[in-house]
Length: 193
Image (cartoon, rainbow, N blue to C red):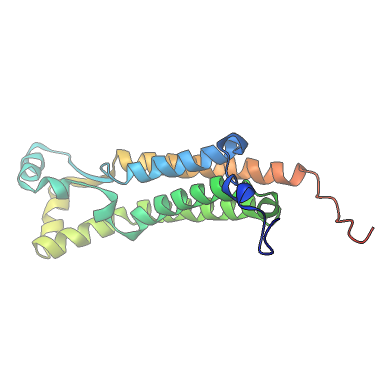
């Protein structure tokens, strides 16, 4: 006999099957994983445009020339973390037809859009955040000297991979929303017959 609180334990134990996860759902998780791995790669790089500035950059600690997302700020790491959490939710809860019909594809689409917007804002704010942190660490004139000497801030490999993961998740979320709209509606319950 089953318990009053739910299905029998054998059915509850087998609630997840990797074979029932669609390619779109696996893509959500993979995009999140790529974005999180990108957090540990150089997110922001300083580069010199002339020989004198290049020599000055060699004297700056390596952690300030190439920064990962964790030291770059909230706008750098928030998007990739949101993507991986969304990917996990999509893979785990996408198995349930009830959850999918309740709006999981739309939630995925919104989360991926927010993650991409956070990463774009982080990219746009990259210069000001970087120079502000250099000023805090080395005094107010450090960033002015570096900028006037021909040093510029550029997006690193991690920033590009993170954005690629975000855009992939967003594109596949759009496909999943479209597929959920084409799915047949669940048949009404026939209780009492």
